[in-house]
Image 1 (cartoon, helix red, strand yellow):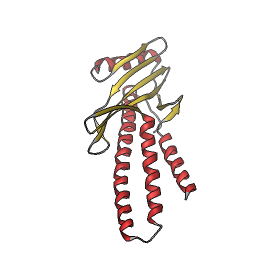
Image 2 (tube, helix red, strand yellow; image 1 turned 135 degrees about the horizontal axis):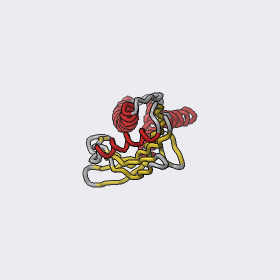
Image 3 (tube, one colour; image 1 turned 60 degrees about the vertical axis):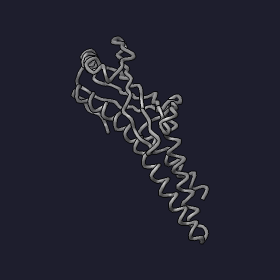
Image 4 (cartoon, helix red, strand yellow; image 1 turned 30 degrees about the vertical axis):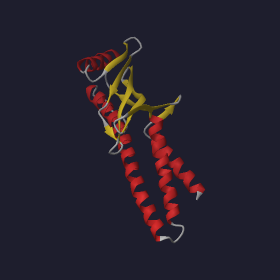
Length: 199
């Protein structure tokens, strides 16, 4: 059973690595957009987009020579459950080359709120850890469910599994909303540049 739990933990970490890659301790979402446009034209289009939407995007790096634009975003409130929520924020970096744009979303910060009282800043790895811990706990509970004959204890374990599954679903929802938002940025950029990317 211990091997199964370790395998499940590794699988969970692998699934999260499919969307975000850990680079120098920082989880980063990366997509390459191919476009028929040249570097100077790409830069002008993206700079205008960011300037026109300055209430949503805060420009950090603006280097036309290197072809780098970075901008910070803060998303709306996302809920883990009835009493816990988070305000995610992150930095997007766009590396502009001839006929190619590399979009990266990183430095993800989760401003977690517990019961409306406590605000704690966590990075994306804390979300991955919570998902992994929850998945592991469900696996352990299912193992306990298969052992023993105490009907009352099994009913309590089933109830705990149900509660833990709800928690895991909410964590997965927050994770999916983040990655969907990153993909939305890629999609917007690709449409502006008549570009394509691999999903």
